[in-house]
Length: 318
Ligand code: GLV
Ligand code: MG
Image 1: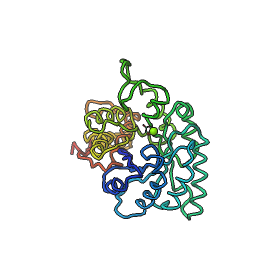
Image 2: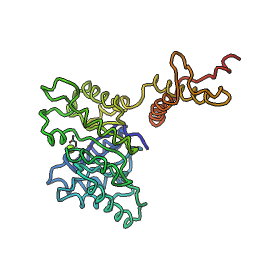
Image 3: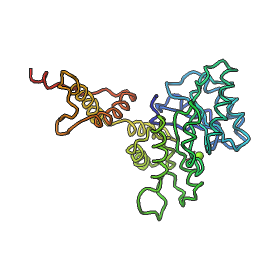
Image 4: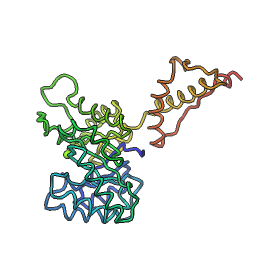
């Protein structure tokens, strides 16, 4: 799956911002029809989005549109407009405020019909369910498996905090008065575990204090450390930070590739067919190779180049 270290939110009502976004190095750009667009501007925003998706100048970003949720009057028309208008240039639909599998299936059915009608490959448009309320989190397993189109599970912290009455107005920061642990830990781990259980990407939501890049970096580093694949960004300055934070560090990437090479060598007949061996000061085995594989895969997907080489002991002696 392509990387989604940085997921840039762009209001569909703002053609100037969409035009600028096309040249930015975010892994994914989503054009918003939902909460960043006022109700009176929704219809015009659909047209802006279709025109933008069909226009030249995009890089290789994943292109996504966030439609309105199924409780509104707008979802079906959002999906029809963007797929009929620009389905060939659309990688996925981001479906906000998902509460159950039925909502994902409804979107899946609509997409299938549209893909057939527009002569697109059936299944080519993915779905990114966004978890934004208590019911969605309780039903996350059925949501994750509701359609083979599901690619990611996305956290929506602002709506989520409102949904559970968490007492804070600063999205991404801890509620004042809760001075023990991380108030988001359960939600984040539920999303992460479900994503990993079903081979999906786990994406953290926005950090709204966009002028405070250090605070963004701290918030992103926390979910990157847990194992999340990426985070929303709301401003160009956050993109590079997210790309860096959700890529392995160079030393870790080098070490991961070295562990994989060493493990492959030592478990081979030439290397003595051993399952647990010393690599430098550390003993490595099958589990170490699995951990290394995760980091190596992330590094490769991010286009990293290794700066060290594993030399088998026999070659080193010669
Ligand atoms: C994003 O949609 C959020 O609710 O945080
Ligand atoms: Mg939201």
